[in-house]
Image 1 (tube, helix red, strand yellow):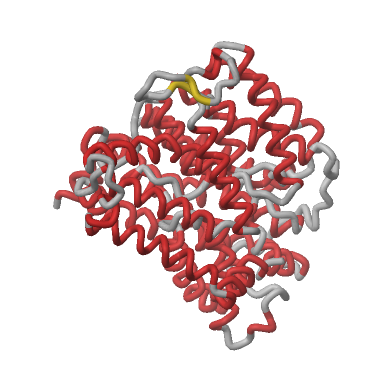
Image 2 (cartoon, one colour):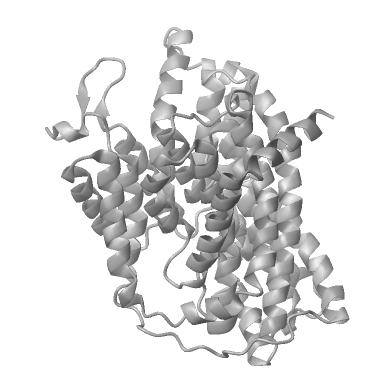
Length: 501
């Protein structure tokens, strides 16, 4: 009964004209960003962070969330029609979605993606509403030692589930943690790693870091790309799937939704890993695995359902524990911190309108996706023909204005430029940037909880293993490390990530 009252409060907030407008803007903008190859939710949210500073917290988070799960759907459009993923979680959909389009079934593939997206989003929203309050109440039992151990587990999970070299992912997380230590020591008042720049006394500005590593680095990386993209077709018909298609896609959507909902909760999981794993699972359970890659509807339904389910369940640990599971959730924490809201178990109690309004807006946003996107498919087809050289100057200008509006000095713009070049070089060297952002976001909290735990225990490290919950979390972290050091597990991990290659 209490849950229904909270949901009623959430829908009242989400259906207000202001929040409904921002939800629609977020979903439409997210779909457009997902359609454009080379862009994605992370650089887009990074660029729009400064603009949300003037919005009420509820409207800001609702719009950014709409961009996130809107982009999950939008990326499937370009994967199906052009065989170029709009963003990383849509890579797998290229395999069967584009083959369906080549057979004249582009409309069916797009409708399958829309249905899978809506069903998964609806189920995931129910899970967020049901489990987030329970997890939040559990988190109130956490002390400094438990929070430190939880963050260690989160960072190790992000390393283990990172795509690519685990060693490089560890390096990126450590770099992010070190960057978070730049500035004034909150205990001694001394300056750390500022290199004599007074602008760094308050630490590295999150917006400059995020927009440099993701927004500007994406521009540099894509500026030399193809000016035009060849469309397979400009006419879309036969949108509604056949009865046989519905029969085959239904169990795939159920499995994809279930898998994505679980993986979205894991540190480092998120939409990309979920879509890859769902495709691999579907291929394993299919009676005709060799038909995958030739245009089967299950190959579109499962990964599309998985990435949308994961996109929404990843909000649970971010809101209730303050633990970002992926780069987008790290940016969401940054957006909340711009509004002086600290994610964690107190969010539901102190900002119930924000939390339940966000939950309600997820369902509304998924409904908007279905209502708007299929009729607007012809607009997305036209957007695909825009040359990238017309887009990147606007992105650079928006980024510079955004950083300056937050930092109020030119140093922040130069800092963004430096991080943009660094981000581009790291990508060229095969390093993932997302773990670095996770390390930066969690670094200050990691240090603060460690210091508090040591003060409580009079400097004894035993506090981390004598408290049962803290010890259990550290044991789980150790188990994750051991599991991924075992050669067979390492090979399985590589198979999941290479399934779509």
